Length: 258
Image (cartoon, rainbow, N blue to C red; front, top):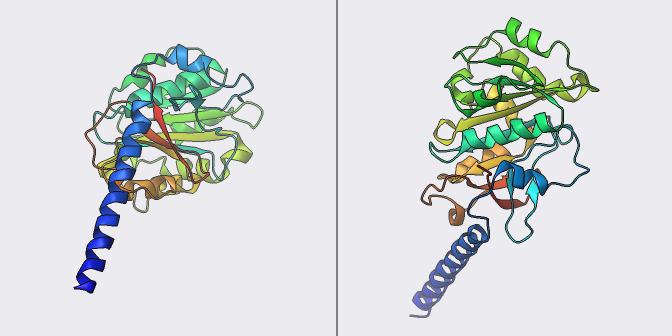
């Protein structure tokens, strides 16, 4: 009887902790702004943010804009992952707008006609590739003027479409040597296409940072270098709601402008 009572106690304690974590996760999202524009979010950034700072989202109570500095960290890379309808393309559009607003240069890769093409004609866009393949020669030409003083960031949506593209070796090199060469890489991919496997996308994990939008599986956290629990996975997909990890071991709930 005592053994059963102990098991019941452990079970109840576990259920209480799980329920508490779920409620805390829900409360975090309730504090977020219901809707916010890019311009409003941009005004919340620290004025001293560097040129390669990328706007990922806005927090709730602090009303502060958060995002990675692509010129620092363990690798010049950032991942946006989530299921269809979670707002990945909008998040990548915001990142592109932020980089361009800071007078950084970008190369857009949009094989499935996502929102990225909306900024293709803006100043600072070096090139925009729209096919479901990308050659080494094309990407080399687009990155040829990059330097630490005048960097170029590749922003790619639907990266899983290009996981075996001809430019894979060069994309891998961007993650490995981008700090020295003045290049960086931001990719968006579908959560159900994770884990990345052995191609160039696997190299992205070295950055240990990213934005998870409405994550459905605990294993999704592996792509951005952090463990995530049941309290934040498997929820109804909420477009523009996600968890940001900047490599410091902390998940920050954010609202994506748009």
